[in-house]
Amino acid sequence: MFYVPVILGSVRRGRKSPIVARFVVERLRRSGKFEPELIDLAEYNLPIMEERMRVRDDPPATSVEMGAKLARAEAIVVVSPEYNSGYPGVLKNALDYFLPEYRRKPVGLVTVSGGGFGGVNALAQLRLVFLSIGAYPVPLGLPVSRVQDAFDENDNPKDLLLEKAAAAFTAELLWLTEAIAAKKLAET
Ligand SMILES: Cc1cc2nc3c(=O)[nH]c(=O)nc-3n(C[C@H](O)[C@H](O)[C@H](O)COP(=O)(O)O)c2cc1C
Image (cartoon, rainbow, N blue to C red):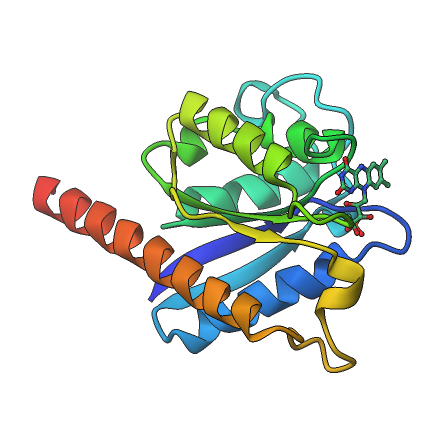
């Protein structure tokens, strides 16, 4: 089983992204290959990043906790809303606490929008960020459009296409996670 923190990058009042994050966590779990854990930035409540966690002698306790989870991660998933054609500052603030924790890890990107484009601007921006910090974004992202209408009262997708997209996303994340894990094993 591959341990995968699922970072929820929305802390907005009345936020919808937790529905998507829980959906993704559940589908990863159901694959039987991943051990997902939700990292809700609203609970971590990281202060404005003054310096990276590892180079501070007084790092915030929640950054130490999050850093340990990222260090243990064999893959990482980010669930990000799109705000003003980008991803939220609170997510960048959290990501910037860390660096070596990301190295050579596969990253699955899930974006959430109120509009019809699934947050593809945020998706493209997050790809660039993760490439720059030494991680491997999985080419297939999971953009979720019109999130306010996308799930029923049991938090299941109303549209089968979203279920299929989540299955494909999970399969692609697994493919890259297994490939990287095999390579790391061969190197030991
Ligand atoms: C500050 C702000 C900016 C937004 N900008 C966009 C946008 O550029 N494109 C879009 O499709 N939706 C936009 N929305 C709608 C959000 O994508 C929508 O509220 C969605 O539910 C975001 O996830 P959340 O509920 O977890 O915040 C914006 C919402 C806020 C609060």
